[in-house]
Length: 355
Ligand code: DAH
Image 1 (spheres, rainbow, N blue to C red):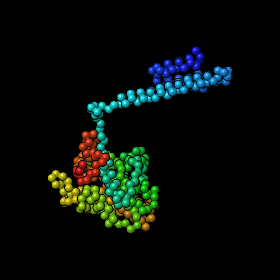
Image 2: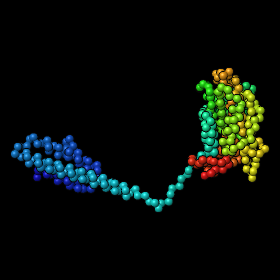
Image 3: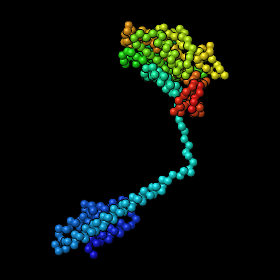
Image 4: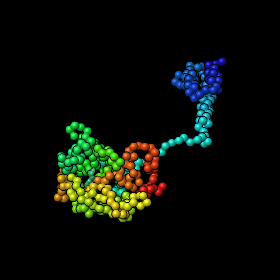
């Protein structure tokens, strides 16, 4: 039997066995690779006597075609087999019980920060941020707070070093300084975030949240401050009318300064904002002190404006009927499940949701 017939028989029988794709490819290289058996037969062509050459060439080509066809068929077969077994194994059993899963909730504080940001952005306020770890200058000195001010006391402030250079910011007001140093007036932004004070009881937590507001421009006066806060409170509590009271107060970084109370009454055991003759303090505010503006190189003869600082947790408690502030930060899953929000919730009326 000639060499090529032997090769043909050997490999046809190999290809007819139950082999995998790798083995088929191996066979292909063994036959048709650079030094493959069939390739080598073709190389012999030149040394074959002319009389035998024609038959040899036609036999060889026939064998080549036959084996190549067989290889392609085999590859196709294996691929179809693979697809079929995949389909069989990946069948979905719709009768299986579902796997349990937990859906996350949005914390009421995050929800309220989003609400506040969207209300103020409607009237042109940007949102700015500052670090939780502040230095003494931005937190106090630049805000016109004298060295002997009680807020600087160790009882109140968490200092991070003996020299009292670094601290956990006690309010969001340092973001006023940082943001004004970064740019040029006019400024109009809010800055929500975490704040820290050495205080802990049912209505105070060592970490809490504030939102700062600052608006500096030409010709701003206290009327703008009142209008802005009135708009915000009405939007936030979703009421058409609000009783507001500006009580004279003192903050080192504003002059004049005021604290704002809003009117409320208790109806059926619930707080109703906007009506009634009881007062609830909700924020501090004032016209920015010229010393603060000088510290950030703003020309006080051209520019002035107002600032305010609001306790976010307090607003969340009021709007969503939550009594104990400490529960906010206990990370109790059941609590969060009850008071938390779904991502697509659109809270529509305060102290309750229309879902
Ligand atoms: N930083 C003050 C505080 O934590 C709140 C405050 C009052 C902020 C008046 C202001 C402001 O911007 O103008 O008690």
